[in-house]
Every structure is written in structure tokens, then in C-alpha cells.
Length: 214
Image (cartoon, rainbow, N blue to C red; front, side, top):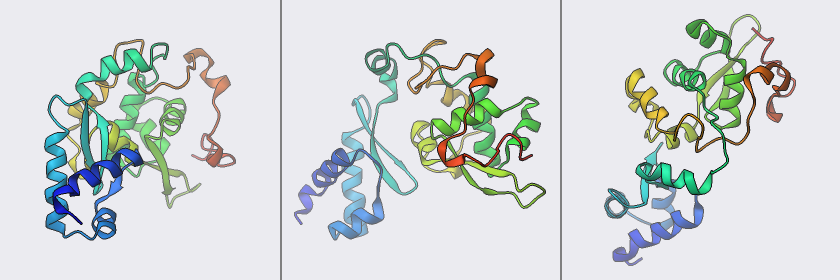
């Protein structure tokens, strides 16, 4: 391989993939030394940073192209002109609690918040920000929740070990809100007064009885 073109080859791979690519896979598949891969990634980070509309982001030993968060409002104005706010303050608070206390059950989240989390848990699952990571070894075997790679990507955190303090995380999550009416990530609208009547479990959780298990 022409090492002078390594960064450009990786650039093409990332563009075509659209998803995160493992650094280990890149090194193995392209026959690179670790130092060569590191140098190529450094070039890409320099190229895709600052005021560039595209940024190179890294998480869980993976790299991926993402949009520059500085332009979130403009991107949203074009791509999501009619979408309503999805991640409410209650949902943001719930995902922050899960991020810091994972793995954690719904009941434990509710004990911290002092409020029911049925709806917010479903919203986070549908937005792929949290996932079921197991069951707690206690009465009823309640489901345990943890954050996903999508959570790391959306909030630009390389790994859970690099979580900022709670208040800073809440602020970084709120950046996703363009204003009180629009959000980059809304895909559906459920009026609060209709939540109880409209909640449905994701297909992969049908039969789990999440709301009753604890």
C-alpha cells in the first residue's frame, strides 16, 4: 500500500460505510503498522475538525464521520423542519442517570428521580440511546439498562470512562435541542396526556413485561 494515500483510503472507507469502523479492523485489513494507522488517523482528524462541516469522531476504539455540532441548528432547519421535540427534560435526566449508574433497573432510576420512568425508558430505547444489558440477580430478575454506542456518538464521548460530571453531561445533551419545539432526533410525537394509552414495547422486548417486572 502507498502509505502516502493511507489517510485517503481510510477516508473513502469511512464515507462508504457511514458507520463506525474498528481501528483494529482497519489495521488488520489494510496491513498497516499501528504507527502507520495512527499517523493516517491524525491526518484525517486535522482535515476534519475545526470549522469543517464534517468531523472525525472516535469512540470505543472506532472512528466515524459525523457532522460538526456547531452547525446543528442549520442542519436541523433543512433536514427536520417539521419534527417536534422528542427528548424532553425528563428523558434527558433519565439517560444521564443511566449513563452514570449503569447497569441500572427502571425501578432504581425511578427511585433516584422520584417519578415514573415508563415513557422515558421507551423513548430512549426507540432512539437507541439505551439498551437492555442483562437482568439483575434479585427478586423478579428486573431488566438492567445501559447506554449504547449511539449514546457515545450523539454526545461526542469516546467512552463511558470519559463521562463529564453530571451537570456538564446534562448541558451537552441539551445542545441537541434546537429550541423548545424542535429536535434533531425526533421520529414521533406522543402527547403526554396520551402516553399511558399509547405506550408499546419494542418488538425485541415483547413479552418481557417491563412495566410489571419490578
